[in-house]
Amino acid sequence: MRTGRLARTAVPVRLAGRAALRWLGTLQYWGERRREKRKEAVLRTAEDAARAMGEMKGAAMKVGQVLSLMGGVIPAELAEGLATLQANAPPMASELVEEVLEAAYGRSPGSVFRRFEREPFAAASIGQVHRAELRDGTKVAVKVQYPGVREAIERDLANVALVLRMGGLVAKGLDVGTLVRDLGEGIRGELDYRREAAWQQRFFDLFEGHGFVRVPRVYHELTTETVLVQEWLDGRPFREAVRLPQEERNRLGEVLYRFCFGNIYRNGLFNGDPHPGNYLLLRDGRVGFVDYGCVAEFDGAVIEGFKRLIRALDRGDREGWRAATEAIGILLPNAPFTTDELYEHMHWYWAPILEDEVEYTPELAAEMVRRNTMTMGTGGQINRYCNVPEGMVFLTRINFGLAGLFGSLRARGPWRAIVREYVEGTGPSTELGRLSAATTRGGAPI
Image 1 (cartoon, one colour):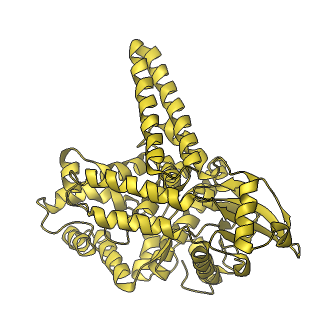
Image 2: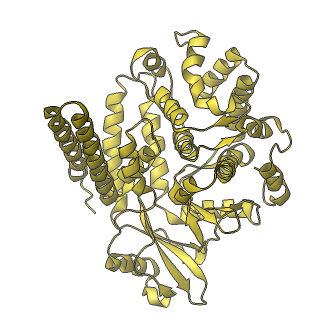
C-alpha cells in the first residue's frame, strides 16, 4: 500500500483527468449518440473509481462506500460501480496476512487456528476477513488489518482537511476544525481492533437473545490491535434484500431503523457505518450486525436536545424547532432568514418522520442529501449558517447512509410512530416493537 501523501493525492488527480478527457471526447457526437457515449464515460469512470479506491483502502475507500449510497445525487452508473466497495475490494496477498498474524500472536497462525482460509471472503477499507476454525473446531471470522493502512489514512485525512478548509471559504458557518477532528478521531478509532472489540461487547451484552438483532460474540483472548476474532455468522449478504418481496423489505427497513435510531435514543449509542457489507440476513429472520469499528456514545444532555427538536417538529412548532436546532448547534444563532425559509430548506433532513407513514425512495434520499450539500441559491446561503456540531459527523453519515439504503429497499413504515416510542415513551407501535420489548434483556427495548 502506497502511504506517501503525494502518491495518494496523485490517484484522484489522475482519475479526474481521465474523466475530463472522456467527457470532452463525447463532444464530437450529437443527439442520442452523445448520450450513449456520456453514459459509457460515466460507467468507465465508475469502474476506475471503484478500482482505485479499493486499491487505496483507508479513508479513500470509505468515501467511496458513502458515495455508493447516494443514488440520485451522483449518476446511477457511478453509484452502481462504487457499490462493489460495500463488500469487496482487492485483497492483500496471503503472505502479508501471515506476517500480520505472526506479528500479532508471536507465533505461527497454525498454532492458533486449526484451519485458516487463505482467501478472504470480504476485503474492506481497513482490513479483510477470513473464515477460520479455532483449535476446538469453533467457526470464527478473523479480521486482519492491512499493513501500512494507518499511515495511508493519515495521508488521506491531511488531504481531506485541505479540501474542507478550502471549502470553508464558501461555507462560512461550517466549523472545519471540528469536522476534520471528528472525522479523524472516528477513522483512527477504527484502527484499534481492541477498541472495536470492546464496543462490540457492549452491543453483544445489550442484544444477546434479541428477537431480530444478532451481534457476534468476540474472542477477546485472540483479539489484538491488528487482528479481531469473532463468532462466525452464517447468512446471506444484505445486498440481496433488494430482490425480496416488498413486505420483507419493509420489515428489514424497520429492523435497521430500530437498531440504528433506537440505540441512539434508548442506549445513547450508534454504529456509524451503515452500508450493506456490515449486515447479514440470517436464516432465522434476524439481521446480523457484524462491524463495530465506528461507534460513538452520546450523553444524556445531547439526547435530550435531539428529543426537544423532534417534539417541536412533531407538534408543528416551527419556532421551537428553530430554537432547538440552534441549541444543538446545527443552526448558527441569528441566521438572517425567516423560520419558514429555514424550515422549507432544512425540513427534508427529518422528512421521514413528518408524516404517519412514509416510503423511502431514491428520490427522497437524494433530496435529503442535496438540500444539505447545496452551495448555490437560497439553500446554499442557508447552509452557510448551518454546522455539523462536535461529535455529530458520523451521525450525519448514518442519516445519509441509511436514507440511501432504505431508498434502495423502498422501505415503507411508520417511522414517526417509532420515533415517538423513543421520544415520548409511548408503547410499541409495531409487531417488531413488541418483539423487541419481549426479548430485550441487556438494555432498553429499541
